[in-house]
Image (cartoon, rainbow over all chains, first blue to last red; front, side):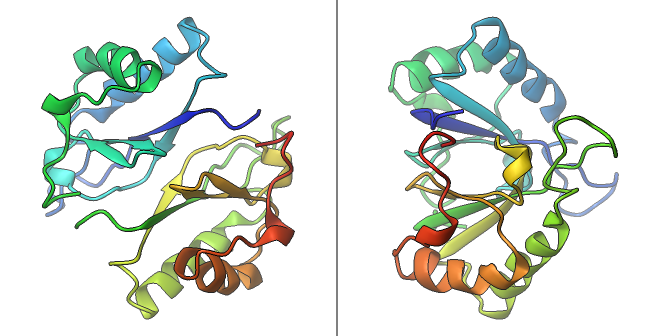
Length: 107
Length: 107
């Protein structure tokens, strides 16, 4: 597969219940991961975007977290309902989704 | 954690024995993952580099695969012995490790 213009990493990290860091898994990332994969496949966006699951990318208490490269933009507290907007605005349109963007002291 | 200048994703994908795609797991990525984590921690490079495990990034038969952003450079067939060079040359020095770079038809 040739290198796509944008690559989105969706945190799928789990940790045991009661772990002090928590995890995106505990914050419900499974349905966010599923929605990214579903829309990527249904819309056939393989030439424009790559979607990859990732391990921990930092602010677990603000998860589910998503990271878009090459811009290096992190989104926090992403819900299933936000995924279409991330595809349409950022991954395809090149416009950041400001309301989900990580604060500058976090990333 | 503030955004570091470079972010390396190390594929940690496993698939069952006999799976037709194979996986970086079957190609020995576990010791590559361990070496990235060990050197990152021993050298205390948290401000310069972020290291994250990832799911599949594509060419499973050429694994273990590693991907560096923001450049979007993929390295294939990475061994434990290559990790120090990737840190010194690319992640810290900004010079690509040409001998490990993915062919342009792959990435």
